[in-house]
Image (cartoon, rainbow, N blue to C red; front, side, top):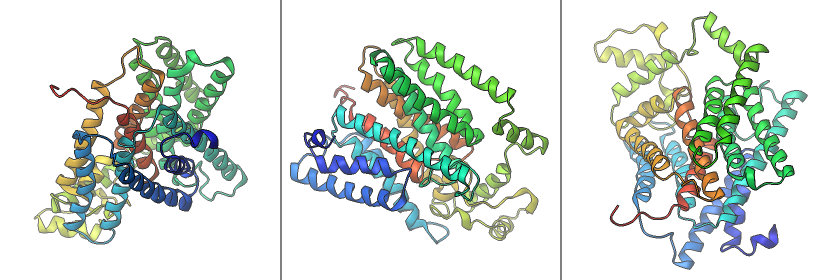
Length: 410
């Protein structure tokens, strides 16, 4: 591997990116250090080569505006605490995607990166199960060590499930029997671990994502859709028949008439904050400052009543879009919406042709799965931040990096 690494254009930079991918779900400090060194190496290499990745395009504008929106919000935030840190966090994952998009990495390097992400996920799950079964983990839930809370671990796993099944669909016919068995085992392991998290939103989106990705390659190969629909039906029946934890969790919320797990009350708090600071919000990473006392005051200033039982305080809004409105206001939300809509439009409009290469379909599937999880799970949880934000942005950037430029007439 080291011998092959020396043959690429920027060996040290590529090695740092691989190290970052390996550390991403595992350990905090080495992950952050690898990210920082990677950014430095990327900038130095591009300056020395006088090659910044080609002509400026629409996606470069979107990445730049996305990053700038965080600092614009911080400058005019309604509340003050950690809004600059929140802007830094947005810049960290958006910049990673931007550099990957302009990195000019070869197909071999991209396969290494995706392979490192899969390997680190498997290693992180092995460690997570050890902590869960040994009692070393205090939460009593399955967690990737550097990702943390079980819901965020589930988001990360759902995105990686998209990478794994895309790899299966893209390469199955070219693999030997042994490689097929290994890849199928890894995908099944990630899927089973996602179900173990009992995160309803992530499991639902993850199970739906597999046939969606399979349907996308219908004209290329029809077997994945038939097999995935059969597998999803069997899994759903098994979850019901064996009364899996996610089903018990759903039944408990239904019995308590609390299907949204208090999210309606959380979203009301966010709506009041957005009404108070409609343009720039309360500041990124300041959502936890929205208290009952503030909401009561804001409602009174607006001449409206306040019933405390209808509002629930929370560290975040448990919804990507509601959280963005409350923290970033209309302008910050518009920047996020522009990126997500452009992402979707690119996936639909620039899907590989049936005769496209295996790597093209793998990268498209990884980026498509990341969008589906970010937006789908984002309806009930706050996606696109920290580790799963870094993962989603990296998958987007790697896919964009291989797209041929559009013709001038287009």
